[in-house]
Length: 104
Image 1 (cartoon, rainbow, N blue to C red):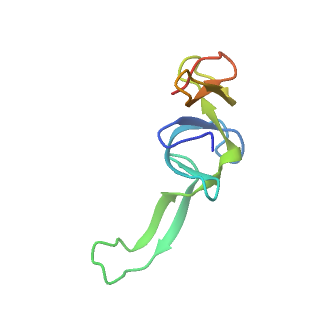
Image 2: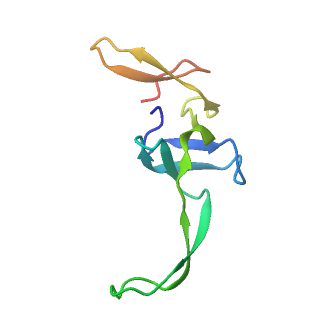
């Protein structure tokens, strides 16, 4: 997956289109990400045996598919596609397709 935890992304579809946020959790097995401040859902939560659980209606960020977000390049500050370049030591580096700069 081309998007990792800690990346700044911009939503490109849905009700929160255009919102920028940081990826809190990346789940490559299901191809989903959780973005802070985006796709807020309301959930009714019951009281459990754990007394620290807050009963009532809570708001939390729901996972979304990785195809609904685009990585924001730190150098050019625009949403961009991600390419790869092989480094001299043999590792893969993520590259911005717009400004051709290394992201990592």
